Image (cartoon, rainbow, N blue to C red):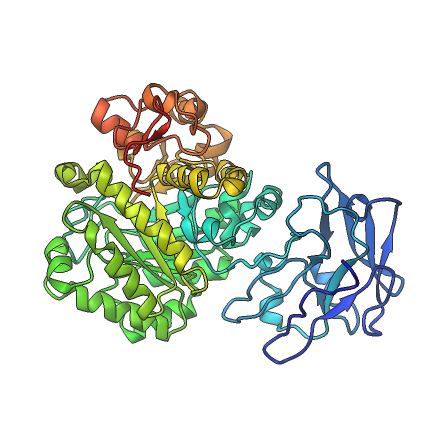
Length: 550
């Protein structure tokens, strides 16, 4: 490292994070690093001591990493040294980096014999921040990731993989992290079979969207009661669910939403909300922030009110959605704009992305139309393969152009989008192909029945929110953990086992490990749940994109 120390990080209070050399004390605070073996420092067990008291011990792993194992409460009460932070990221609501750095060759999974390992000891930490478990992980890589993201499995994050914000290193490290403790950003990489759960708390909605996968309308007489929902949240807390994505219908129309949200906060269950945005008044936004809602995703179908309102079935929906986003931002909530593309609005994508940049909305999320609910009746509006490719080309180009902007660009429910990225990298930046492919492989492509689950407004458990015909149990009758992990039924087991033995074009595709197609589209178009996805833009026989527009 030629004697250079990575750039120092500071808290908002300008309190410096102090460097600690191996074997030396930190700023006279009595914290020392003690090697317990010889050789490569990343393969050497180490002990962190406060005086004579051991507060943290590391152990070597087979891939050469050192995973820091600690008892955080002891660290944060050890004398005047209030704590060690063993990761790098952004504290919630605070644009501050903190962390543990490797000092040489940060691109390598096993840096070549660094001269020292720099620990950062914090002399002052806000108590409310150190209690949050997602702040503490060991990633021996200078990474900047956003801990307040609400990414779930199935997302292809263009801005992350194309702007060097994602690393194989963080993905591999996240494999060892329990889902419930993983940063929001890394949930999809955990090897633990605890899914992010889409929870429909109501069928009721104040709009009438043409593509609604729930066919939402009036409240169902047997949907969640307050008592049932509270018990379910308690179960999720015990289960260790990584995140609840609360949706509907329109979740904010439910009288139970805020009781559920505040109970989830009390139980430590992370919650985000998927909404049409029309009900987010300043008062509602303040309550969302108080309930610690991690992310507010608002559906917008066009950059103008005429097109959006026509698709949503209610005049004024666009203006109210934009006001809702502004109110959420004003309350300090992380927000995002989401579009489901079809033939009538796919050309709105550039305008909506520009809108995000202009209004400093930090996330742009693109959904593809899926034949579920009312969506089944409008599949003639699904975009053509050429139109889909044009949209992906724009997102790819913009992810690179906007790499220095505070915006995430991603798509979801369409793992084929990752294939598009790989095919372009193969032609334009082949040196990065293997790295990005490994990231997408670790992420796992389609996560149906594995890292994503749906619990609908009646308590039915589905392997994906787009597959209501494949109910595998009901949480009002049996615990979710029993349905999902302890005693999964034949149907759920088959979904997991068939993941890498699909039929048709998906089965013979070289990108099966990073994609797997959309199972619901295979079922809708070919009546074979494990068949090929006919909407895919990649031809596995010719081994090329059907439309190469770059």
